[in-house]
Image (cartoon, rainbow, N blue to C red; front, side, top):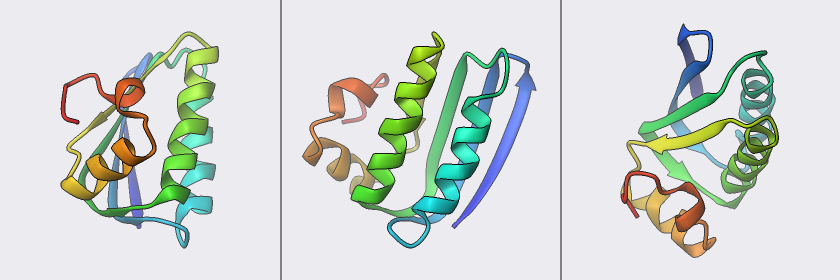
Length: 105
């Protein structure tokens, strides 16, 4: 799993994940996403799943934690490029209404 971080605006950032976001990689990705979510002035974080091959419950737990952190500071959290595996995991966790801003689920 690799993570690429882009911030073109002080209040907006994009993270592109590549590979499996699962039990084996969740702890490392969590550290990076929490660090990014805590950037001063950041209001919108978009996570791009277009290159992600797998998402499991460990990855879902990290997404929930980052979502809550951003919401507490008045920010937004968007997931884009979801593949069928990611959509299914989010639906199974009953988080579709929380994470789905683009009606992908």
